[in-house]
Image (cartoon, rainbow, N blue to C red; front, top):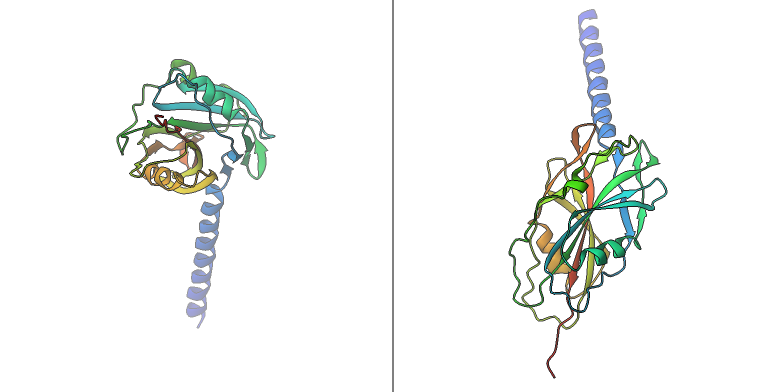
Length: 230
């Protein structure tokens, strides 16, 4: 009888230990939550610009949600300034560490889509600029945000009557694949094709204390307004 009670007691201790361990692991994965965009306005294109491709930006979002700094990781001639100007007007929620707001870095990629004949082709990605790639010594930045490795233009098989900007917040897993996609700014005739394109993108995961973690990245797609001949 005593032996049976001993076995039952050991089983109970092991069960409690496993449950506690599972809860601890769940808690650890939720220690850090990345900053996210709450609202976004459209991105402008200069009248004489024919640039197609992507501008990648590293934003520093302070603990109040304000944009404290913008580093241009991947520039694109004639539209980089427009991308920077646009994101500075967006509103953000700060990252949290243990439930408390903290300053952090957030990656924003703005894609300028070709007007005609574009499909699922990959977007050229030049190397990250040396200035943006410099590591920060600010201890208040707890994580390195995801970086774009492979990007594709949206497939747009139907003629578009209007242009516009679509903005997503994309959850990036600890092993790099895109996960949940949340629409921040909608452009009804183009949002679905942009969302489908994102499923083919690849990212590096965010890093926290040298370890990969779940994080978020902001992706914007600027569709050009059609030009009609009189």
